[in-house]
Image (cartoon, rainbow, N blue to C red; front, top):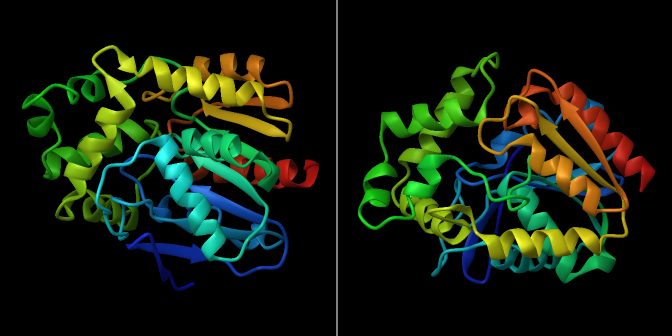
Length: 276
């Protein structure tokens, strides 16, 4: 399956479209990621849905844009991406920052969202890794986010559970994402819009909770129990705020359930879309 490119607000965006008939599912990765993190979903088992994944601005092989993005600005950008593809309604699936973006997309245009799968979504609570908090400090943040082998190793150790085997192809993708000129500067700029020294910004958590309370479509909170980036307690609490939500905690799984437990994730996705 080949990738395509489209220009949105002057930003060259890489995306992958399964082209299948059926409900449209938009897959949104997390900070520092790229569309390859959805490789476990572009499989024959999901042929009944049209899957579309993209590299967010500043990520993967997409362009950078003129300013850093946070969840709300990413959400506005993604609706323009959806419009450019001529799509009306979508099912939103987001991992980490992608989950926070999905919530803001729902808040901006709720009539166009048919369901949401929030996998270890960001902005649902204050806790976040100490390195992210320290990166918000002047000078230290730039030092900590420098591209290099250590940054690659740290990302792999953070986002995958201890039992997950990282393939050579996946490692090369992460190396490409980290080592690409300008990528770590974009990463740091986004971290600083998401977090402060105390954790994920209080205002963003409040925005996400308010968005959850207004949701009327089916929502699934899916979270790995061994997630070392975002505690699964965030999804447990968020589940109590969204009257249409369900909660699924996954054993032997870190921060990327769509890859680590693709079988469970794909079954949950198909069930959610059918429910909607």
